[in-house]
Image (cartoon, rainbow, N blue to C red):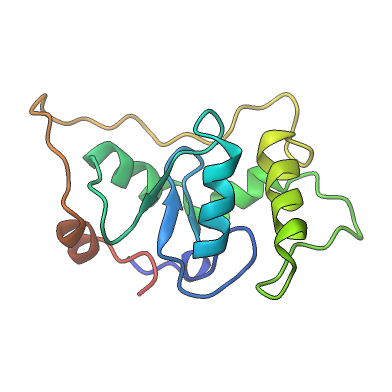
Length: 142
């Protein structure tokens, strides 16, 4: 399931992101991953796509939301003239973008909650998905 929008970082557009915010359901490059970690787990909890263990619920959430659905919400009220950062943007600019977007919630609708995945049903086994299974069964970037 290679979605074109997931082949770039949700925040700066860098190609082939290898990290994700599981709370926001977006894919991130290495730099934006580090910034998200600095923002705090109360806003964004991150994982490595290829190394960390993923629960079936987390995989389901990423499949259902991903970068396009998340951007439609988090950037819905983005004012004209505001430029998204690029892979070449300074770290300070990218950090400001991430904090404005997710922590301060400047561009999302004030009266709507963030997107959620439909209810996920799984047996109560405490199962998790190994990264190799995650990558084999679900390829967000092709």
